[in-house]
Image (cartoon, rainbow, N blue to C red):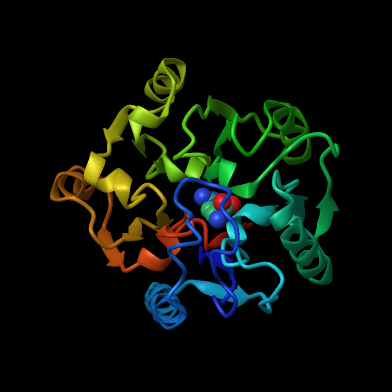
Length: 265
Ligand code: ARG
């Protein structure tokens, strides 16, 4: 089945505030390079036969490129994010308008519960939910109810790897890649319980947020600079590893997965 993604061109992408340790107003975005990297990524998606649509960029939300965080889209349902930080709240309104227009049923979580889409990973019928930094543990039950599934939950204790997709990627039903240093002891046990192979990342990979990858039908699309150690560990489980430069997005605390909201069937 072809993947369907929602992206947003980096027209207004910038570091205007600091809400995670990767962001520094002293390290602004090189707009031309961000656009070039976006075009390289979309070209890779085109080559892999991925369908994607684009949001119209809004100048008032400089983090809008990170579309994944706006919610979870599946089977004509859109669970809207409740962003933790005010600076990003409008992004959920924009995504809601987009999915409403596409005929999705919009699901809101209780207003006192945080949820950001980067904390929910899905592969086939496996769902992992990360909580503790940007999403509340209390979001789990209402999400399970909307989707009619059980979520495997993992606590996120690390400020640097604050979204689930910054430290975990599901490669197949049996294989997961993870930055184990960013998880609790229980979190590591949970992964070992549900997956027969847990591939740990190296520090070099973590500095590039390599876990923030897209798995396109067995093709791992990920940040340029991945270590040979991780490449070798991944190879038996994927058909292809495509690397793409993501330095401008890493400045904002994200990479390939955060900028690629997946619309699941
Ligand atoms: N600057 C954004 C923020 O801090 C980056 C979001 C990255 N998204 C992700 N799913 N990891 O909210």
